[in-house]
Length: 412
Image (cartoon, rainbow, N blue to C red; front, side):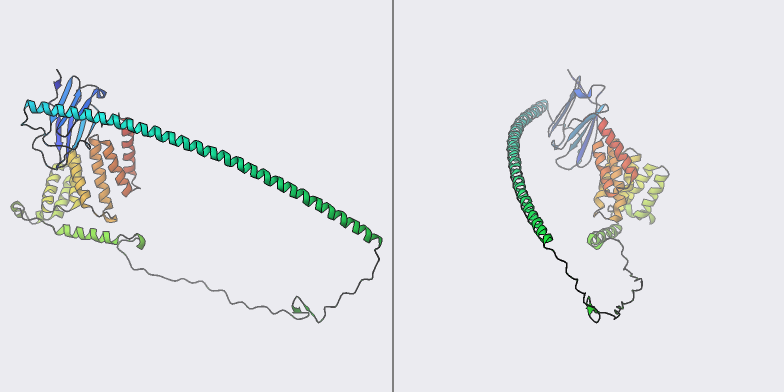
């Protein structure tokens, strides 16, 4: 008879569900996980954990990671909502048994389909390998034939060149012999003749110039003097090249910021009773920053909560509150606030680059605290794409990679 696990914990957001189940000292490699839309079961003898979910989940996206003495489930809801409870309370034993049998049947069917799919892939790979080998053999055969044909062609060309060279040498020998015979005949009949005087060059042109006249030198224009041209450019708010300009996005970001500053919510009666300075989100943000610096993180969260109630469109409020939640170990809330800040930091422009880096780093830190190192590394890499020169982020990302490489593989 298995022992049912009751001391599990769970948390949720509108779209995600997180369940943490302790392994109670058992081996992680002996765990067996079964997950469907309405049913979740983990068997790690002699313990058993099962739950009939309140609403359906997306089993294809959901994951389970086993390590460090716990099993952490990340489940994605099919319909975004907040569940009242984790389990469906109105089920009787017959309905529970039906759900169990349906889940087992679905898993068995999926395993059968996976086996068939693997067999099909294996046959396709073998067929592809055979085709590739035949193609490679044909190419090698053609290559060898081409090499032989090229060698025959070279040999024929060299033979023709050699024959032509021999013919030229024979012709040169014949001409040289004929020249020597003519010289010998001329030496016999050679006579000495007086040399003729050379004609005088006086009064005549030599190389196109009359003798005795001085050649006129060409006068060249003077060398240009050095100078400096001063150019003044119209100043720009965002100094980028015109071909890389993001002026439209930058103007859209500035417009959104201006609209967000004006979106003050005073419809709530409780907010109308506040003092005049407490109705200013910027004043509340500064107050939260001072409380955070003083170490009073809970009071800082309260100040930022009030500021968000007044104006829910300022990304800095969510960004600062995520830092407070990190300090208070409210990790899921830190992830939620960082994600909300990234949603508001659109479009991405240089003016909000630093804020986007902070949001990714804080969400990545929260994921790592939850031992979701892969998700955390993705956020750190996103921050590095925005600011590749940030050495601290580079160092933390490298540490997370080492943790992922050294940890045991998760069960998907």
